[in-house]
Image (cartoon, rainbow, N blue to C red; front, side, top):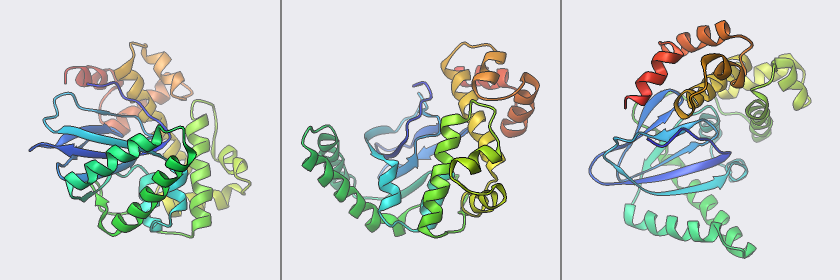
Length: 257
């Protein structure tokens, strides 16, 4: 099993073969179906389950800013920011060809090649948007769509949380980072993401703790503080309520896969 990792990109994945590949993502095992393109925001720690039968054929990483600039429906953008994994049926042969070219262009030193890649991906995402739906096992509900300016502001709040989750931050800090009053920031955030700022912060800290439990041998106190929890007892309480097991049980279970 590849160790959990994260990066501030939109990750698009194609799977080949007769069986699903499986990703660990936000504490759940999400099937990636052959013949489908799967897309998710890779800022959340994730990894491929080592016993997956399906073969991950291609991956393409694109900047999050592209997602916010290409006029996708608001509920899709909100779903991705909230951690949804979306998928759609595609022509696997045709899409593999696109992914190969995009991968080449992304590494090009020619700025024109990279710009062409981003324009093509933008157009393709706009075209496929009506077919994107939560992957198998994902919640079918999506946050309420709001105006694009709201998307940009909430995205900035999410970025602040992702960059500072290991610090003792709260709602006031997140709101101040985007120049909003705390009450308005809380309403805006929840209207789009479907979680409060406090819930989202705790959720991200749990995701980071899961990554550390699998990828490192750090003791529980070090995991708790590295993930941003103020105490070990707070860490245990949040972890049990979110994951239904202790951190130690989670580590042992993941390493037994």
